[in-house]
Length: 541
Image (tube, rainbow, N blue to C red):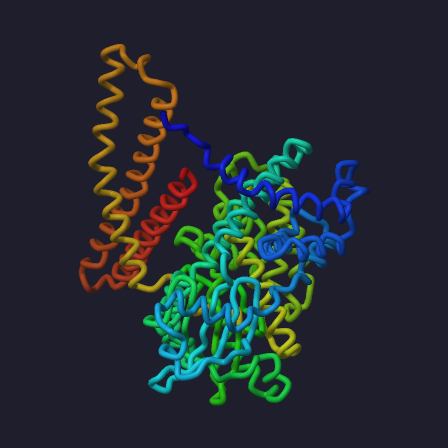
């Protein structure tokens, strides 16, 4: 008879030796003192040194915690931000074995030359310069051996520790630490999948093809796998070093950085989540070269719409609009949030922003303040928003380092204006209207049937056989369908009335103008109805 084994227990058993090692490190760094209360926490420096000693997975987890100012005091966050994404370099023999195993041929057959000294060495991989036999210069990113097994073991140990902490300190349950660990594990798995990174490079190259001041090295697919990534070589200089030699070139480079960041966020729902100086080079011809797409973030369309509204409200100082847009970005459990108290906090955040010199305003800091305010009032912030906030903080920090006098907000506002105009373009209106038409067709087909089923049950006296959740769900569905139908009728009425006005006699010119205005209002109403429907559906999911 086969014995069923719980996968979680099995992974924990495999992680037991590593767990004991982790516990010994925690004891040595005085973490057990935290059991006696906050006043006995280890020092921020001790916490950082603990993560460094525990190795790759915990170093990465420390970097994730550094994004969560809503969880830890500033002193700990500041110290965790010092964690370096570096490990000692692999020897050339280990690199050769990895490359040959992945690509299935001897190194000398694959490459005409292969640099033994890495260009850079980080926690997950290191990069070597090489030359293909056809003469092309390439950069080869090689993943460290046995990474997958090590990460799985460490994540199992980390999940157990978090579960244990919640049992010892029940108040920690409200922080959703197991969710944080799951999101971290998913992020780390994505970052270690070089096939995914290769796909991201292709997507970014396509999305940013019209930015002529930017070049992204292409993937050499035939020399790439899930653990080895070969790309065109970028013969550029780090942007921070280049800025010291060519300060006059920085306004152009910064405008390009802002444009590429916002364009990918709002048009593709994808963003480079680690835009530090080491990943941004300046080519000899002055173009930017963007590297390392291992850490990227994704935003679905409803979240992008909400983010657009949030940024607009932050820039305008509209606290109520910012609150609503922010809650739309984090719909899970938002109905339980004290909106009035959250609104007061967000008003305070926006007041501080607009009281400052606009040149000193930071979108990253503004988002960070919103996240803290939301966490205080029970908002379950999506992981993507934390990553996006960190991205803006890194980007803004780099821009101020490159050119302290640059009007970053001016560049930001110009690009937001361009994207907003595009957001309400005729093509987008047509797309939204098409979606509305399909939604209308669906609800017109569904609503009568739903209504007939309820009325038949009432007439037969069988309504009591419905389970309460089913009645609630069906009632909600009918209510939503009626709401959509009412909105669609209003939209259609405006457009039809506008059309009739336009075909009025020519001597009544004002009819034509009023008719056009009514058609535009009808289309706008249709778009608003569609967007609100998508947001509510997303919130229910």
